[in-house]
Image 1 (cartoon, helix red, strand yellow):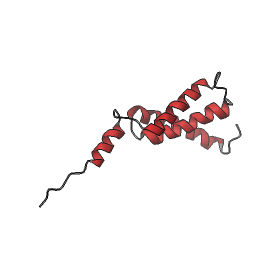
Image 2 (cartoon, one colour):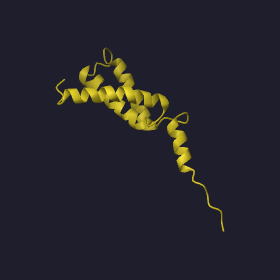
Image 3 (cartoon, helix red, strand yellow):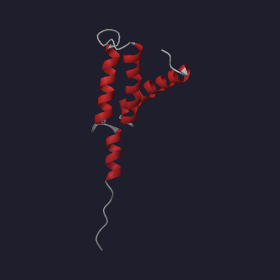
Length: 97
């Protein structure tokens, strides 16, 4: 494909897909994980498969669209991110003296 440092980018793709998939399944750090997975699937669908969205790149395009959607909208209420954000933003109120 002509990427500089092919071993480095191959490892980035492997780690993004493996650990990013686990993080997405858990809903932990979902937006960054979805972003890196979106970039990986974008390269797979539109660079490697040359944008043939009706043929060999169809699955990559679907994965790209779904991870891009998660990047833009977030994981939702059934995620660890939501529970952590809700916990961190509800600060205890101080009583009036």
